[in-house]
Image (cartoon, rainbow, N blue to C red; front, side):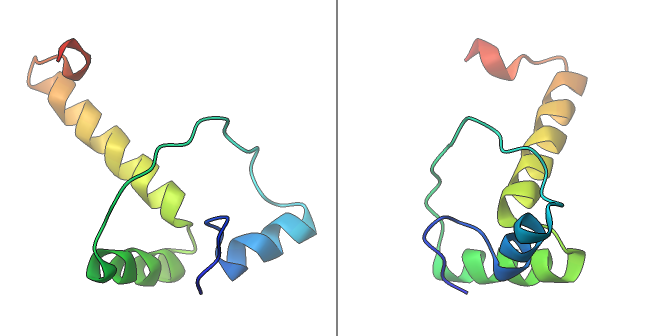
Length: 76
């Protein structure tokens, strides 16, 4: 399931059927280990979500927790 555009076969199929969500304009590159990639792909398949969706959700949860602690992650 190695696809240069970052889409899984499932996501590509959804796009062909017209069910894919609107493409987001910004890209952030992230280096991860082979093991981390495998875990994300496995979880994504089980949850029927793309790796990007999983990472977006994780980032939003982290940002929410940071704000709840009274810290501003954007302040650096």
